[in-house]
Amino acid sequence: MTRHESLAAYRVEAGIIRSPGKFEGSPSTSPRFWNLANEGGADWDAGQRIGFKIGPADTTDWPQLACHLDHWLYLEELENGFVMSVVSDVTPWELEPEGVE
Figure 1: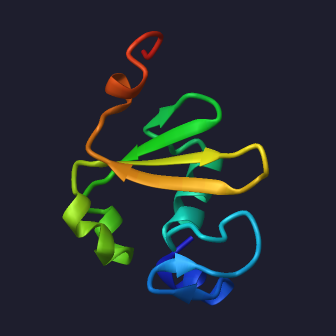
Figure 2 (figure 1 turned 90 degrees about the vertical axis):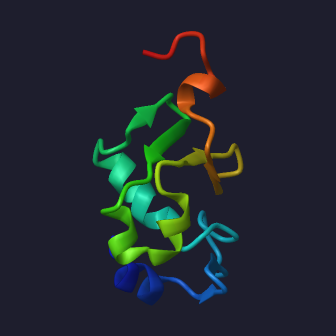
Figure 3 (figure 1 turned 135 degrees about the vertical axis):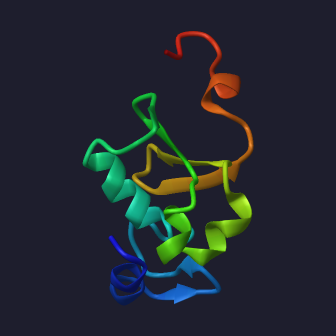
């Protein structure tokens, strides 16, 4: 999902999705990365929590990610069906050092 498609599909205010649904309250980047994960494109997948290392290609459609190069964007589907998104400089191996391949 491109930036244009995401902004057309959701009501976004100040970079946050305000439309009701699973992405409500999440950054406008969330649907793009969620779709990418569902296509098997996550850099790290621990089942309910997935992660993407932010690189230069990600900033083409999403310039707000430029200040987060080499950080990780994590998505997690909560029990209530909402998707939580967090950008962090903590690697997956630091999050869950045991059992990560």
